[in-house]
Length: 510
Image (cartoon, rainbow, N blue to C red; front, top):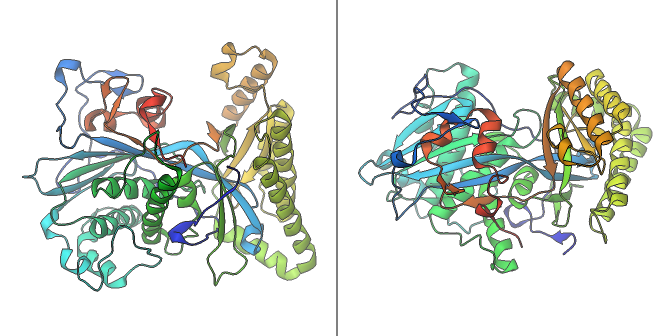
């Protein structure tokens, strides 16, 4: 089905502005409260992650086997800045993802443990000590199917004694990040769980770069929402024979609660990042009146396309770049209005392609790439590019392997390159017949590395939230020790990514 209309975030049409994501850090050691340090490696390392010998594996609890939830990051493909001024934009899922491993503990433990080693967060709560009275009061109790568009400040206040102890001795910036993450998790846990919820450890790993507008926090909130809804049995599936309507309803349920998590982290999120992370593929969004919810159209037929995501390494400020365009509009309203109209036309043209007859054809991909080039030029005219972004575009243009534009607010940050049909990653060149394109891409990758650009090979337009239950891939149990021991983004992706055993992961696909 083309251009499926969605209820969007929280059961209402939604749309967007650019929202940045999460945080990164260092690994931390397991424990009952916040701890520093790291555990020693007692097992051999293979392919970037730890493997336990078969005879040494621990048996899973047959009543509650460990499971993993995964959700993608996002990129804005067309329409940055114009969307702030009432025009349409398209955002799409990228194949860089977050992964949440849920391991049920013995009933005697009665603890709730967060282990987010990529940001250095390790904290444990005692379940009976949590503020259940406030959250389960008849006037404030929320059901899993409720529409929640704002936070209940009394409930937020009731959580605070349990949040202020998180990373209490850490530096201010680290403490703030840890407490935001803990708040998002705990608010959802208290809303969806109960005093009788099983003790559990939630371990998170992510391959989504942070702080560069790729929706890393929304990806994590979708994982948390899905895991907790599965544990309270508010979801069935995903499974191959699931009816389309049922899958849509369950995705909307996940999306609503993920939005609540985003409220705890960002205060006033657009809701688009979590909508993309939940549904995958792409969305068209527009907000003409900020007093009303934005409109969102889920584009489930958006083709999955190869993409280079390139980080310039140049720090940027979304607020600064948005303000810069706002000042330009005030000084030159007619000129900037025409630029916004042109960007909107690009977005609409891309929409017509991806909802058309053959969105993945070579002609369609070329059309989409050329639109990216024009979109970047218009953004440059608004003053939101940067010399590093322009250098990057020059290198890509010289290589001839694809079309490049900035993504997000600009002023540095990231750019995306849509690869031309026939271009391949350097690692795949020997498998392809098109040696010229492969050689050109190899040379580009060498230049990018030499000039300090960070490159991520990914795709755009893929699946949304998925579940690996039980946590088994290619016959190997992914337990907590192996999961936390995976080294870096490459190790995590090698361990649990869909490329290793594509059929093991299940997705809601309306």
